[in-house]
Length: 250
Image (cartoon, rainbow, N blue to C red):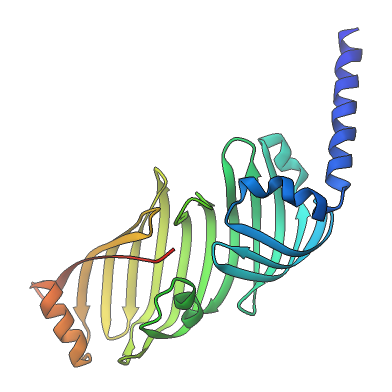
């Protein structure tokens, strides 16, 4: 008798879940909106199982031509998760995005690339012009919608070039990060250019960040760089010890 009840409950639950996931996404997304206060989908079609949006606005970042497919096995882990294909600043992006029943919104296994100049524009830091491409391979992103998200993964920038207000070639730069208590911590390296950099980076949810590291000059650098290092770094044994902090607008 108990087994019959269990089978009945499983059957009813599966049927209800099928109805919900097959319903038009345009009618269901408003129910999810309170859990995603900084995200907005525009031009929705299809269902939660498989659908499309013309545009996704997420924390001031715009994605276009967004397609998603449900990842049903994630339901057993307590999350509503989809595989996403989209365009970010004209470049393809792939990721898994989800809403944990108890943990909130998250992004995982995100890969993509964009011009470094576009990334700087998205962060609101527009006083410097950059060249080169940024590639990212994000293992996990949490704290979405609660300020600056915590990120674990790798970001590479090559060729790492500052174009204006001065010209500076940094060769290749890479940032590897991990998440500790909702804070992003990582190691920054730059090699093959006018400056060799190794340092520890911390990003906080409020957008503030700190870099503590060592900088070595490889040949001649612009006079403005020399002045900056002399003013804000301590020179010892052939390298400059730099401690720098600032805040990104979010």
